[in-house]
Image (cartoon, rainbow, N blue to C red; front, side, top):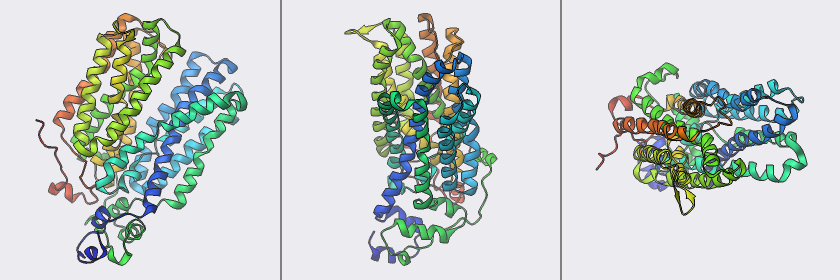
Length: 474
């Protein structure tokens, strides 16, 4: 939009100008900075497995003790997701994000100083790491994006995050023998640098400020983003009534709440169950050791990255709702096929592995689409809680998926499960059933967010201005 056009439309809302105007390079730097913190979440989540593989034998830990250490972060994320989401809705996206990063960084780095054998303290620190994860939602990244770019920008954060896995792999393979597990644990402090940069360089969410009636602050921030003189950017329109966020207000939008629960659980329960049991099944089918099975699973991981790229771009053209529907359907079909066709081979390659590679395109890749969906479905006043619900459901998926398979297989060992061939078909069909349920529910709950401006005034919901429905399926 030119300066003259902006001046000719004084009735425009400041957010309207932001939606269409050229953005300064500073804006894109802030987007990049917000995305990078996701790298370190994945880095920490992946590297803990290597740390425990070292301290387990050194400290003579039992299976139960190792289980507690490894699962502590997941439990912490469940505990922290909703309180941090409420905090973000009540006091701002920026303080919640920075507090989350500082908490998980301090807890991860302090693990380097745990005395030998004190696995209880190590587990407590891992629990705090998980609580900190609850504050690192991408709500701020989503809300600072213009509607025309929001779908792509929000999904792209999931695309670059697996780079943290690559960093962890390279550091472990090259430096674990040199600096030991404590040296690697010290790297947990590094995200504090990101938190420091975010504090000084990244402003608060303009949309959240507007939803709180703080138009002047939002106006000042818009002037830094938009390549227009400040006097040509009108004040944003604030809601007639400013209401504080309350967790129970999510109940005002039951359809949207149910949609994000079924999409996230449908992909999450299936995906995390396959991630834990897939290598074990492959080890049994091919009669190979776990290291060889892990090498095969590199291809599944690569397929997941390709899937994230696909579902970063595709929703920009067909929308989030259709993308979620396709991912749930694809997950159900591929995981069912893995369970039914596991005894067969094609040119010496297990059909089971091929099915998981195809499935990873949907249940792993689809996370790029569903993770931002929860935030976008709700008005800005409750968007943090929407993102928190996604994190909670994902956390439950990490626990429920493996537990279901363990119960079907009759195994009490969730982290190193002993699968039997008789359990493969019913186990994987059970995982697929969650995707089927998610598919059917999503088919009925038709809410689209792509191309729909995030709501700062909930009167727009009441009037039906943003209750966007996707076009009928043909």
